[in-house]
Image (tube, rainbow, N blue to C red; front, side):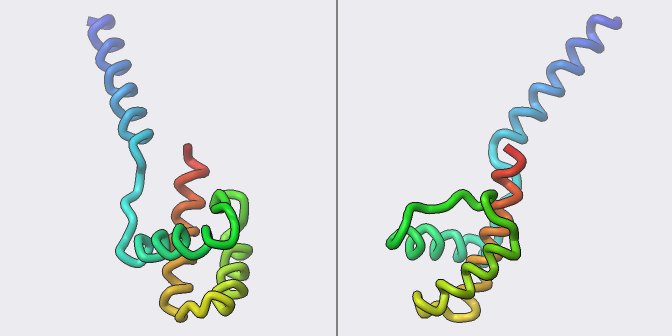
Length: 94
C-alpha cells in the first residue's frame, strides 16, 4: 500500500511539473496587443530584451520614453507595459 502511494505521489508531481513547464498564465487581449507591439516595433531598433532584466518601473519609464519616439498612443503604451509586467513574472518562474 505504501509503495502504491509513493508511485501515485511521484506521478502527480511529474504531471504538475509538466503543466507548470507548459507556459503558465494565458495573456489577456491587452497583453497580446502589447506583445505584438513589443516584438514588432522594439525589435526594429535593437534586439529584444528579456523582460526579467528590468523592474516594472524601469519598463514603464522605458515605454514612456521610447513610446514618444514611436508615436504610440496611451492605449498602446499601456498594452506594452501590461505585457512586459506579465512576461517578467513568467520568465522569472522558469
